[in-house]
Length: 442
Image 1 (tube, helix red, strand yellow):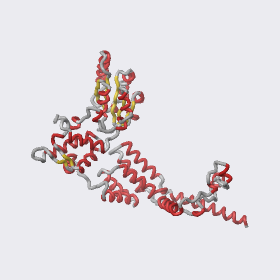
Image 2: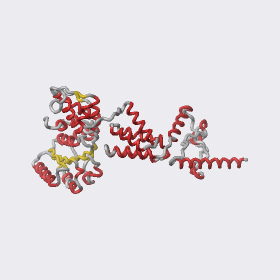
Image 3: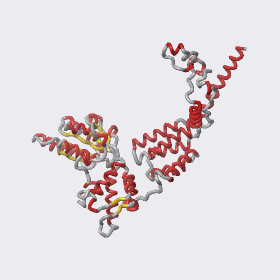
Image 4: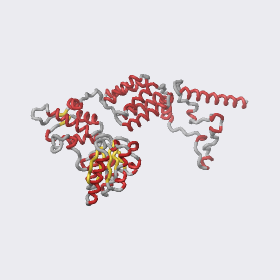
């Protein structure tokens, strides 16, 4: 067994050994429910590398006592498929088990090749399980997609990867248990981080780290896997970056201030520093979304949209391709006109809320759905803006204690100049109307 890679040796033999994907295999979840009834429809398993697509397909076939046939879209083609189909027909004729055909990287097949599966899936001759790392909506033909249930597998989280490390270190028959290894917490965290949700990569790194550790002790047992050993195994030195310590806050501060200072090059450098050191891209994206409102606001309303879209793009593409979307957003924010007027205005409004408490809503802008409310003066003398010229009205919308309070003071930068001009125009209109009303009274 020592000549078989650790990732292959530890491949789960039962669903109980399978780690992760609780959203599919947990109690009352889709696969759990299907297996409980002994049924298995044709499936498309969509997920990143190393999340367990092949292993899950094998286990599902085993659970329904099916004949499992593996087929690679990279190495095989239509001639091999014909042979498999004929064998499935013969097995069925002889009263044998159903055939589960597993097609790895099914997205590599072109339209004509995918068409070849259709009649056999429709007839029930084979149960197709296709595995793909690409979005099935784009890569799988519609007729085949409509005959398969698409299941999305997630990248393995830290808990799942840590459980795999623990199993590998303790299992004496299939794992590394006979070596009596131990592992520093920092080394374990680094291994999990660099595996990036991929169980295969994790176990490959762990196996190489174990070999390096064992080579450093006289009898080959009781070695400790350290951060230095893991770094040597993965051939990548860790950048100094503590995601919960001072360096974390120093670098995110440098990033934020580079954006605020309209320095795209510095912003890009600090972004690269964070992502290269393993910072959570979602944390970075959230900071950019906050920055878009806090430091740009209405000077460029598109900044908020672009920041949110960058987060969506990262989730859609994953690492490393999705990082480019974060870089694009950072450069946009750094080069956008700046304004903290929204941030300041909201701060002043919050301050008044805390200072004055729950001030009553003026009667004329209260809702009046009942006769009693109308009799009490709710909604009385309310002015409907659309009935007035320019949809501008001389009407107080603040509580009496805050009358004429102005929080939002737009700058003359970017789109806020348009907003400022508009507000100035409205205020001039209202001032003119008040002046005319005053002359009429006299």
